[in-house]
Image (cartoon, rainbow, N blue to C red):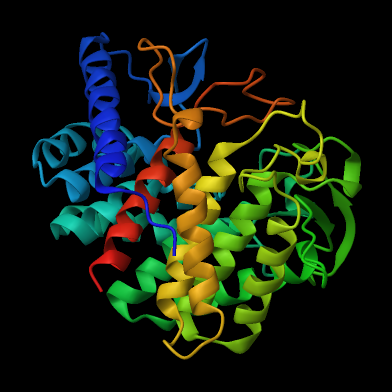
Length: 375
């Protein structure tokens, strides 16, 4: 099995420490504005501070750094900043409160045991029910007809419900997550492992009607790389929940499609269908998401399962690539940890840039790689 060296791992962690302290200093120097501002994506190597669906990832990155370094500084920093996200807890029709609160308050509770974090995360989980339509899927309220569309992002947002179920034992959370995942996956995941970004739905029954892509190149015949890994990661969480054979099969199919449409180093083009084109920009953030998903899936399988070793090996192969010099900033002034994270039609329109979720999932992958190495 490929395993990254201790020196390589420490080099990446040291880089993340430098970059994160830089962002903490930037946040501390910003005058109070009343806005929710966190690192979002880099523009010419500098992190833009924005109020976005992704704001929770910077808090999550602080928690992962604490786990990787043992330094309580990052817990203290998270505690100072996390309250900026709290106002979103009541915006239940915005499904991305799942992103915002799982990677901040829920993850923070898991690590610190702070009861206030648990309370806020559960309030957000309760309000997320407002985004659930009669058809069982979550509303995409950022689209003009959001109630008519199921989106692949929901496979990640329901993780807040899965967390709520684990900490409370309340069946309503598990049932809501399971139904949403079932309806969404049936609409967006084909039998061959191909995924759609959005599907127009019958809001009352959850019946799929017409696919739609916003972040990929060709309408419905392209596959948005990051969206595909959102689907894969969410399917892994559903398998971990109940070890159902149906979710094991979905993970296998999604993974096979993904791995057959990546570049030779295991990193995809931003549109999976473009990975064979040398000039296509890559999305290292999608590879980091897949890497973490592979580690978690392998850990959830029994030692006798024939998928366990191949998935662990693939996770190691991807992590070996993402921690190589090619995916590290060459400019010492670049503020990201992982470069070549691109979605050129929207947000990042140049190679060599970073996205906060790419940085986060790289550290999450490192964390799970250490968990594997300790067993």
